[in-house]
Length: 143
Ligand SMILES: [Mg+2]
Image (spheres, rainbow, N blue to C red):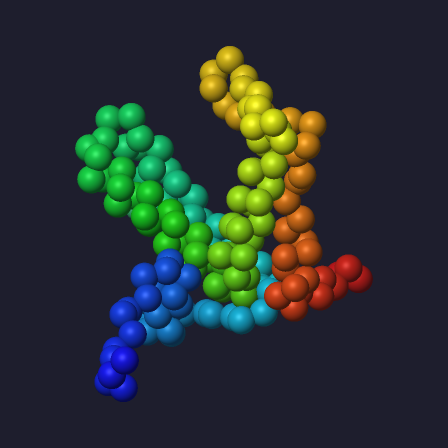
């Protein structure tokens, strides 16, 4: 392989959003951290705005608006995780691991009448606290 090979630009949401936060001087933490209530509320409002925009276009579209607003939700969610110092990819992996336990060992899936996949008897809840501890979170329970 040539020494001059340039790595392709990463397209993982976490990397893209970190680039955005660093470029614009927004908060970016590398360890799960309790942040100020004002900043936490601001991030929550940004996400609520984007979620409301998804709801607006969910039924009537058009499809490009829906795609745009869905991407905005993901972008702001990753940004909020970054502001709190949470590695969201690792949390997503844990949620996925848990969701996949909804399949029984025999491959059976129980569903509600509307099609929603239900938690079977082998379901394992996600352990998000453990994921954050592995990232260095040391919750201060004394307040
Ligand atoms: Mg939007």
